[in-house]
Image 1 (cartoon, rainbow, N blue to C red):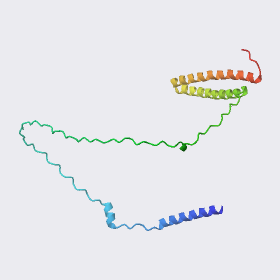
Image 2: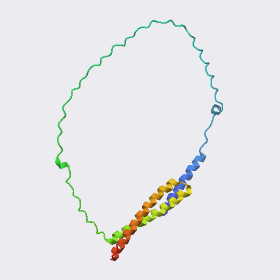
Image 3: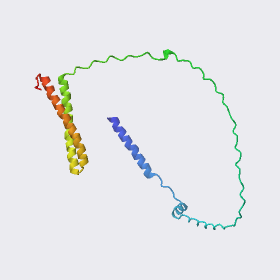
Image 4: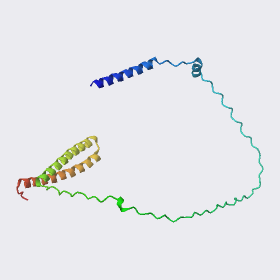
Length: 185
């Protein structure tokens, strides 16, 4: 605790010294020539006058001379001798670590009817939550006048409702199995 206070007070002291040094630092001396240089810039020299338009000179027609292209330059052919590849020695077998074997896989725990019932109930709760969310989104789309989006949401809502009905049927059967009751078919 005491060290923390010393550090805080030391930091505050260093900050105070820095602020005092900045305030007491002498201001830069500005010479009058420098002030004048900044206040009155020299006027730019006037732009040069535009060049005079070129005068037309009559040109006589010259007989056309057929030009022949210069002869192509011949590039010297250079051949490179190819050396046979050097034989490589195989790496010794000892450089590889010995194979490691994985542990045995533990068998799955038995999936009882109660376990399956809990899993199905959790899945049904998630689907019910999606159904409620989709119903709200459909109502919002209708209120905003977005009927195309409303129809898309309605299709998703119908699919989720169908899935939810199937999950409720499965839950009913699993409850009967867990309770040991025979259901009439």
